[in-house]
Length: 196
Image 1 (tube, one colour):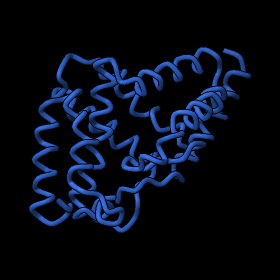
Image 2 (cartoon, rainbow, N blue to C red):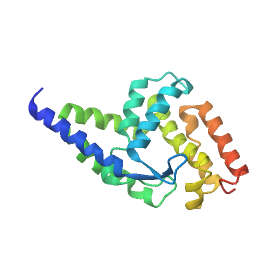
Image 3 (cartoon, one colour):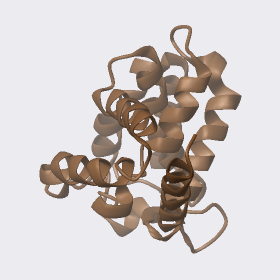
Image 4 (spheres, helix red, strand yellow):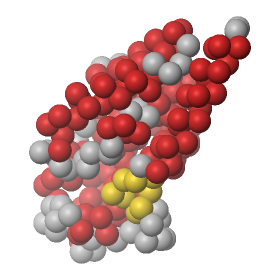
């Protein structure tokens, strides 16, 4: 491998540092600080390792891990679109595609293609691995919201039906995790963390 390739790889790695400055709406458990994208990517990757036996079908865990570590890289340029913001989601695909082209384009061609393919597989959500990865990506914010007593839900006026409708696709990757998530949502309503 040439030094040019190494230079490109180092440039990409340094660019990834910016992911630590992209803040999400979820709060880090037990704090008043919002989670950043780098923390989220790491946390859902850990979830995948711990919960991989909960997937609906046999999965390639390494592929799932790659998806979870790569899926939000585009937010360095595109920003984080709040999960419940339908208006902000209108141009999300276009913003993220432009970001993917620039960011993955920093890598040597073979890695650019691999990373872009993995990112696209996650976005399309058709394979067992993508469905499971998307399930975890939805479950993590639910956990954060529940264990912060609904702090972000309350701040944004989110209601139970919105949370149920947006998160029901957890079942596509793991029926067992959806049963857990839906019971957590009901418990959040009972506890006053989420408006009915």
